[in-house]
Image (cartoon, rainbow, N blue to C red; front, side, top):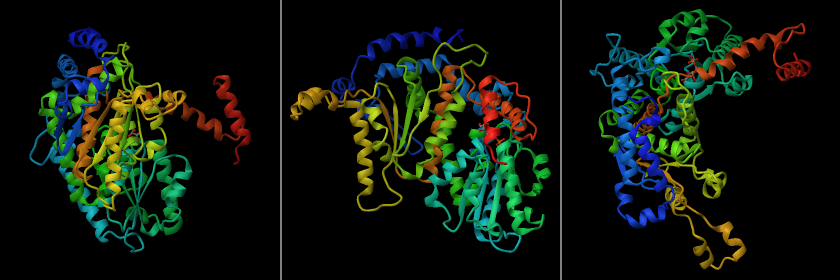
Length: 542
Ligand code: G6Q
């Protein structure tokens, strides 16, 4: 491989190609090539991708695919699926794809087939979920469990919350699910204020079982349970753990028989389909959970085998590189037109930004090109009445991903046609805009014309599926996981570590005693931090 990304022949070709394409308007591209709306599409695992409304031609795609080839994307995909330790900075394999491998497939880590272990845990989760759902598992006082509270943060929270919201339609409505993540006591207080401890099960989800927020919330949950049930023996009926750290789990007082394990080759933000998904499985049942895994797996197989020019995650990832590095776009808006996907953008923020928010390549060199864009978004149509103004008429280029479903899970009158008309209309308006001539022809006063003109040429993907089923959710998440991998591979960064979250944690540990000590502490921070700590100490109520 050549020394830097910029040295690759495809990169150089893309630079000169960009200078030709950047001045072209989507209006022209569509007028010259009426077939592009049908042709620039791809389909896999039940997801249909229309990428025709991009400031890209067939040549652009060809060059991006060449960039992927010159970056050895194929080799990297194979290395990931083979279990090679591609998370080099943490010396780990990266095998979330093994979490959804069907029984009978083999994937080896250090000479051991991990797929049977995955299924052993899934079966244990299924048995437990069934016992909770059927009411067979009783709380300490003999009452069945009605409330499930997942305690976890980051990768041990965002996936489970998102999946529960996304699959709520398939969930057991007799169960109440809550998620506590923040160390802010308000999170715990509000999540539990109307719950009966005798009917509540806490799932303490933490890969390491040492995370400050999660351990603090778990201790609070323990005290909350004991305040009502008044016997240490109650803990075994009301607490289970999801972790890789059996020692810490038993130190906490949770019977390791009630611990659901996973492995160091599953990164936190890639763990929602490991045991971290226990709350999801309890909510929707083992069958729906397995259907979700099948959706993930279908997209995995597509990513692993399809040629890049037909490969949805590769196309999505490469187009993100195109806008980030050649057009200078800094963000990507993810706009699901489905209320059930309301937490999907928040989930994607961690997946994308914790993965590719890096400025050093795998071999430790500072990059000289932009990497990971900012992902953000809200469900449609709500966003249309808020930030879409900026996407349509602001000064920034914001590629958008519209996500929609052809069938509603809650068909009500003409709601769904109204919803979907907005998906198509927004993508159309962004791409084609409205010229000053068109605005004038409508009789608009001259002075108002510039305000009512839409320059258009604003790119988007439209991702369509039939229905938001567990399978489709799995396929959709895997689409983004692999898009992130595609981007990270081109940028030569490690999408699987997160060293950037360390420093703040270390500094907070140092500050905690300075806030808690009775005596005035000797502060050695900068003058701003010292003054803020002193002010807090003065004003806090103990
Ligand atoms: C994700 C990160 C991070 C992690 C949390 C929780 O990729 O590693 O978000 O998931 O810090 O960690 P624990 O599961 O160990 O509590």
